[in-house]
Amino acid sequence: QVQLVESGGGLVQPGGSLRLSCAASGSIFSINHMAWYRQAPGKQRDFVAVISSGGFINYADSVKGRFAISSDNAKNTVDLQMNSLKPEDTAVYYCNVRGVTTIRTSYNVWGQGTQVTVSS
Image (cartoon, rainbow, N blue to C red; front, side, top):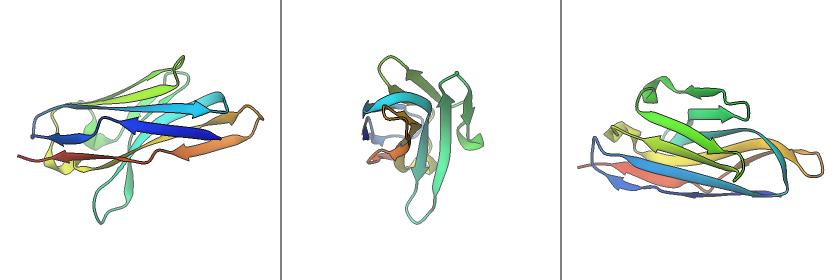
């Protein structure tokens, strides 16, 4: 099994910054990519950012230039630095990791979610 633990959410004023972290543990043989999604109340879960094991990075248009995703392959962690936050960034943020387990099966796991609220 593979487990994810997220941290770093909270309340911040518009224009402020937050950093989210996600740590993967368990029967990990390899990680293909690590990503962040978010879900606002009453809306579907949307893609935010992804980083692959090879270093490919992509962002949703709504966060380009404001958010930065990074990973530490040795520690199996992924961070999301969020700057210039806007009220519309308010959502529950979920970490998603995909890869291969030590018994060579694929996995696609989600974190428990962390609340980010941008409000004055």
